[in-house]
Amino acid sequence: MSRSTPLHGVHESLGATMVDFAGWRMPLRYGSESAEHRAVRTAAGLFDLSHMGEIFVTGPQAPAALDHAVVSRVSGLAPGRARYTMLCAPDGGVLDDLIVYRLSAEEFLVVANAANAERVAAELAARADGYDAVVADRSAAHALLAVQGPRSAEVLAAAGVADLDLGELRYYAVRPAKVAGIGALVARTGYTGEDGFELFVATDDAVRLWRALAAAGEPYGLCPAGLAARDTLRLEAGMPLYGNELTTEVTPFDAGLGRVVDFGDPGEPREFVGRAALEAARDAADGPRRRLVGLVARGRRVPRRGYAVVNAAGGAVVGEVTSGAPSPTLGKPIAMAYLTGPAIGRMIGNVADERIEGLAVDIRGRHEPVDVVDLPFYRRNR
Amino acid sequence: MSSIPEELGYSKEHEWVAGLDDGRVVTIGITAYAAEQLGDVVYVQLPEVGATVQAGDAVGEVESVKSVSDVYCPVSGEVVEINEAVVDDPSLINSDPYGEGWLFKVRTTGEAEELLSAEEYAALTAGDS
Image (cartoon, rainbow over the protein chains, first blue to last red):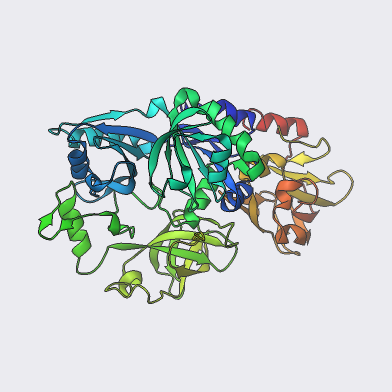
């Protein structure tokens, strides 16, 4: 039985198509997912992300405990700042990708993917053992709403923001404030490739905040947006999705996200779970075992998750699509895929800009030509 | 609840068939229910004009943002016309599935597969949308 977010009734009253996602009943789309996608690119969209996990790590040694638990040095974050990082297994495999917000000197909020939240909380608790720090999964007490798109700041301002100057809130910063009179943690983060805000509020305040934002945002073109739009938005922005691009089978280096791993300075190496395996992954003489690339299809058929990437000439399988969709912004099908073996040979030794050519995706039995492109597919004008 | 025109026949695979009673050429499309389930349709592949089709054959595909589905032909015969407008603008399937969003026409030979009435199709899709 799937869980429902506090906004379930709102979604139903809006006529949303609901789907089961990561154990939750979530809105897939309210009307046209392409229109929702375009609204986020040109105006603003309102998302219910209450399925995400909110895990608090507090205590005098919370910074040290988290430094040990995740692959980044979060103790270096100033209070009010956030970092994208990962929780890795001792073998270097990705257990989840996370955003860690430092709320104060001794308090961190770790936001985990819905499907992994319980596991992340348990893993953080185990890794914090022996540290003077407390790990508390407070997912059930929190709702998460996101306003994403170029007009997001105007939407929030129209809803009424107190105790915070929105203009001063930088990207990947977080502050407690009041939005529409409701106490919220306001973070300038998102998963769409646009400017935007994520608002953490008490479960009981979710409906009131949604209604206030929807009403205030209407003149700015804000519309509710579902998981379908969220997926095409993040795909265009080249952002990985746990379960697709990120799994326990891949390391951050495979995913092209090795930059999130902080080994410390040579004179002062950093200790964290998975370090040895990740060092080996970084230093592997023959390069990463696989490489995440962007694909743009030449035709109109869409490469989708699980489809084989093949050598157009010989038909040999050289990789697998992890995510794919028709891109509303590019007007073409786009995909992310892992290439393995000979296909990545030419990309090893820092010759990544040498183009890989002659690839196709096996789309239901037909080899459809694709071009390998740099990620992301879409980058907003700042 | 999506609309289900009384006068059409329906397949379990969510195609509709028009013109069964008054002629040998029938028009085939996908239902409003199917269009809603698919979401925004972005690509349609239809059979060639002149192709011989058997009832139950997969003769094309309808691709949406989130998924791809086969189009089954509920009748046997020869494809005599395809809707070029829907190939150019697949969103017609979402905006007008029983009208502008029709897919192709078949001159029938032999029997159609057993089709559902509007009432039966309503029962098939009830409580699931």
